[in-house]
Length: 161
Image (cartoon, rainbow, N blue to C red; front, side, top):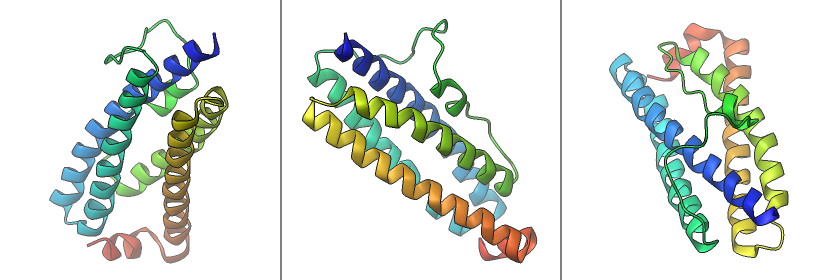
C-alpha cells in the first residue's frame, strides 16, 4: 500500500511541476517585457531545474511500474493542491510572496513524500535532492523579501534591471 501512496505522490509532483513550468514560462516573459533581466535570468534557471526534476519524477514513476499522466483526480484532497495554484503576477514582489508561501507548503508536503520513499533508495535520493533544491530556492526568496523590506520595493526593483 505504501508504494501506491508513493506513486500517487510522485504523480502529484509531476502535475505540480507541469503547472509550475508553464507558469514560470509566462512569468519569465513578464519579467523580460518589464526589463527585469536579473529576475528573468534567475527564474529561467528555476525553469530549467524544474524541467529536470519533472523528467526525473516521471522516470521514477515508470521505474516503480506506475503510469505517469497529466492530471490527478479532481476529487482527491491534497495538501499540494494550494501549492500547485499557479496564478500569474504582474508585480514581481507579489510573485515572490506567493512563491515563498508555495515553497513553505510544498516543502511540508514533500517531507511527507520522502518518508513514503524510504526503502526505495533511488527515489528517496531523488526526492531528498529535490527537497534540498527547493529549500535553497525558498531561502533565496525569503532573502529577497527581507531585502525588499530593508531597501524598499523601488530600490529592489531597480536592482533587478
